Amino acid sequence: MTAECKPQLPNAKPSHTGPLAGEAITRSTFDQVMVPNYAPAAFIPVRGHGSRVWDQAGREYIDFAGGIAVTSVGHTHPKVVKALTDQANKIWHVANVLTNEPALALAQSLVEKTFAERVFFCNSGAEANEAALKLARKVASDNFPSSGAMHGETEKCEIVACLNSFHGRTLFTVSAGGQPKYSQGFGPLPGGIRHVPFNDIAALTAAVSDKTCAVIVEPIQGEGGITAATKEYLHAVRELCDKHQALMIFDEVQSGAGRTGSLYAYMNCCAVPDILTTAKGLGGGFPIGAMLTTEKWATHFGVGSHGTTYGGNPLACAVSLAVLDIVSAPETLKNVNLRHDQFFMALNEMNRKYNVFKEVRGQGLLIGAELVEKWAGRGKDFVAACAKQGLLILIAGPNVLRFAPSLLITSEDVEQGMKRFDSAVADLLASETSVAA
Ligand SMILES: *Cc1c(COP(=O)(O)O)cnc(C)c1O
Image 1: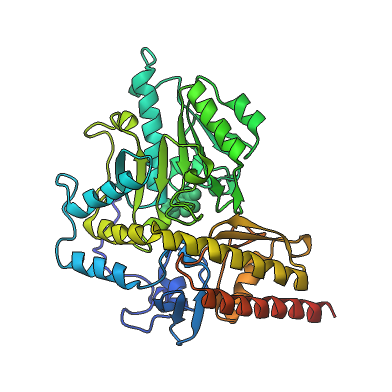
Image 2: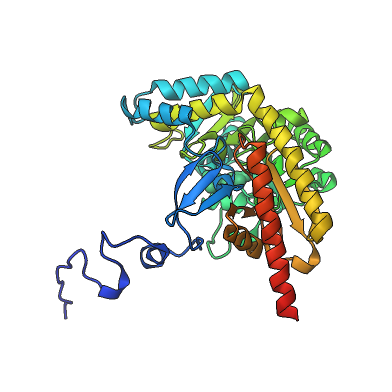
């Protein structure tokens, strides 16, 4: 018996599954047409300027989230809009069989401003880390080949990563990441990865050996709860990598592009990596990622060894060049440090009133407030209470409130945002007391 093959109309599905194109877009449209891997808020932002955002109903929000540390110069910055529209009228895409001016200008600027001598462009943080990990394996395989191994595999293949770290969602980067909840259910996972407790020099020393090809570390863990590596730890990573001829990879996808008050966090700790990855704030809202390295390591990525269609896209690079120009300016980095102090003072003052934080921590405008035991696991309730008051904030794990606003946020916006935050916390505490009563 052969099954009859009926031609399917493109829309041959039950009528209840989705709205017709052209119907009003609302939050419930999300549930009808999107894969349910996100749980977005009830309101939909439609417009932004500086550190303010407006939703479909015209309600205004102060943006302390920055699209998860992405909109580094705020929304619709005139210089960035100009860079985008100027480029939009020139050329959008040429593929990497050709090169383009914006990509070369951006690479030049990154080389000039950092330790890097060579740059690889891609479209996201995960892809930048994927490139970094692949490059480390390639270097080891070229320099320490094992005889008779398939695919040029080498015994020097181990990658050491930290528990609680986050490096992206591709299978390789999610396996390198130190939060099992993100890799659960996706096995078999790539092998050769070891995890060690963060900031534990003894554990690191025990794990790194001549079989190690790379150590990957976030100078300040973002998704893991805004926890900074100690200077001693980062120096130990550098020393162990040198001793065992392994590459030191700094994942600065979140901490980079001015976020910590230096252009890159490695500049604060005086430990220079072999490879640095950057994305998020680098594009200011336009997707781009980059892997920075030295000439010595870059030569191992010869023609054809790695690539991506959109990497170095002229629109992305033109935007990023304008963003980099702004975030690297001394007055921007000065603002980051001034607003950092303002955030810390306001959060600590509020805490004296409400007693909700165990600790306020972070660097520059990457700030975490860990909730006390009583509120543990309730981060999302704070986010929702803030949205009600017209304030966007984030969490970093269930117990930590995260603030990652525009690096250009004004003291007035911080002050007003903090007033809204105060009202949100007061509301949440009041509703909790009334429930208990
Ligand atoms: C967000 C993040 C990534 C992943 O970046 P994507 O652009 O989401 O792929 C990797 N590492 C760190 C430290 C991050 O914060």
